[in-house]
Length: 246
Image (cartoon, rainbow, N blue to C red; front, side, top):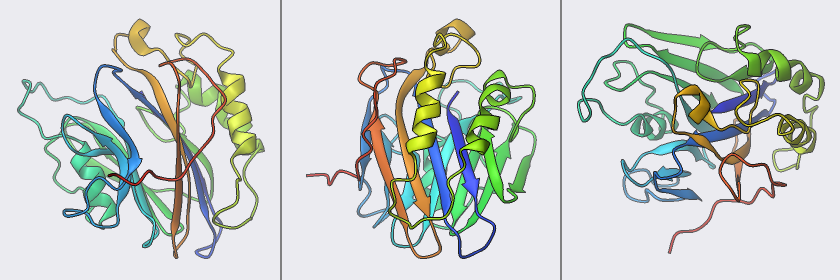
């Protein structure tokens, strides 16, 4: 039940701004933002899922591309092991190959290419593709800007009010959005309007583990990472560039 907030610019020369919060089972091992696929995906950095080898979020800093995966309910009734990992779709999408015939569980895949942002959805029956119009949007596990989401209904107006205005690719633009994220943490993490979440009360074993911020243009992508010290519990976030694997 991850959360993505994205500001789409008015022109193709503008900069996309994104804040993404990852919810995952704390027992599932992962590696922080880094270049973990030097042979298969040279130049790509991402937050790596150790178990399946894919990424929750991936970016190509040189080519100005980024993708992030959110789970979505589906109509599938597959046994464990029958479906492919969704994390592989992130790496393929960053490489310019968005999914067309997925063999995975349901998802919302947010794909950024320069100043263009699209959301590809898969619910087990059909694939949908939506190009987002300029402005600030919020996505979780259903539709973009879903009015039925307590999280989106409560916080999207505030993110829109604090939308980043102009600035360069490497500006620390995210301070106002991080302030909203901190204010959202005053809710109980079990509250359905919470962004920093404990989803066990809703029947899922996932808690918020980390956040990323990104700026993407046609020329480059700047993506940074900040972990939460304790799953589902807010702490002040210091966003840092990708690590360099040994």
